[in-house]
Amino acid sequence: MAKTELEGAASRFFDDFVEAFRSFDGITIAQRYLTPYLAFHTHGAADVFLSHADTADYFQRIVSAYHAKGCRSCRYNDLEIVPIGRECALATVTWELLSEDQAVLETWRESYNLCLVESRFLVFASTDHVA
Image (cartoon, rainbow, N blue to C red; front, side):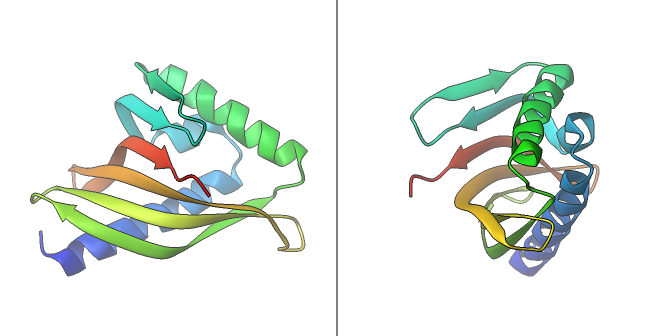
């Protein structure tokens, strides 16, 4: 896949992710992830999720905590993509959590290892960046 095609597929992935996030439903978000899934956090810890149910539970905890802080949506910007072979890519974005009035509550940079599965990107690993 050409880099421009990868960029388009990555943009679609993140646009779809933003819509899934609006549901604040861990199961809906987890549909965008492969298993096993590795999440590397800024404090140096890592989690490995071996089932979709575990991944869904993880995301439910996260979005429930965000919602409790007043988050009602999110957006991404500064998408950078690096091809890894023909069907994988490393995509990095800056996330912003938004309140009801679109005020930014939190921001961070995160990278995703993406792999094309049945013509759509799925995540198999993510890395939160240290600020």
